[in-house]
Image 1: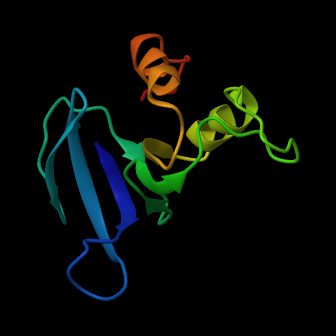
Image 2: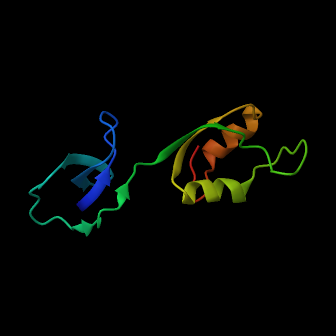
Length: 111
């Protein structure tokens, strides 16, 4: 359980200081004063807690500064994953290459 974290709820403006109960990889409950006996508590310390982000326009098969590149940019995708991007909307890469990425994702990066 993450206690005392700032959370955007997507409905109201601003953030709310709440507890977040996670079981496995699912958020089970969000609210103030959650009672969860036996749960591991992580003190959010008032920091902002965010879900995985969605990149809505990316070019998976592009290397910055390399004109007409058609190779997978491992460094950029790894950096994006480290920064919280978990879902990507690819814009214009060749389908066969993107399909290979789905079949063999990088550590921490999935298609």
